[in-house]
Length: 361
Image (cartoon, rainbow, N blue to C red; front, side, top):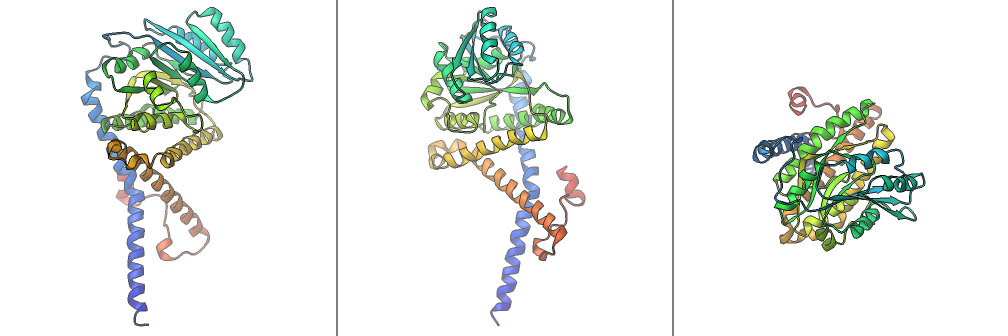
């Protein structure tokens, strides 16, 4: 009995301290990362962006290497006419277009064959059955005679000068393996679509600018990225067993000591889900892709030679931890509305109180 009293006090003190630390982490982590991204974005602007010409005035390059524009297509019959027409009208001296019909069940194959007769730059590869985007891009890479591949989705439309902005990094940086462009939303008919306009135009670009400053980018954008083919060959091209091939190839290239850059002037207009079901499926796939690289590459990061990826890995682990703690807080709050809970498990509300909430907002 003499021991139980002090032990109980010690237990309650440690539990309250841990609960306070976890609550503080859930609250302050988004605030801390917001300042990291803002600071990185401001530094990026003054270090690089401030001195660049406007987006409608492409940079002059010391050389213009030929480019293959790779477009994997699966059931994209509704969008292909506009996508191929805009691709053929790009402002760049030497490029061809390789469209891969990835076993489509609609009229994608027929439309591509018809378009091939109209646009001389277009070459079409037909796959007998659907093998996934990674395999389609791998086939296009093997069919391309060029060193630089610019990969876009089958419903994406590149800005007229996008190739200039992407290629300049390969011309000036021999260690550059990939350059991710700047996707912008073009379907804005619903509130959900308009919310994503703000997300892609500000938040995602800001995060990529900050990541570019501290040396490593979490992932290229799967909808618009340029690759150096020799770098892809070194790492075995895109993985066909990963749910998000863009995250996986980003990590493999950077673990092989290649550089990945972000180019905000390489605009690409894309279609995004405008229903809650479609958005949920997309974000679930992104989350699963992040979890897969988290599990797959943790052993590689034990090497001192790969230390430049440590910050990216730490940010991913911390973000996942925060997400689970936030979910646990929401669950405890809901349970507390129905059942009595111990004082150290009670969550008074989801909105932060007083000036803390104002600061976080």
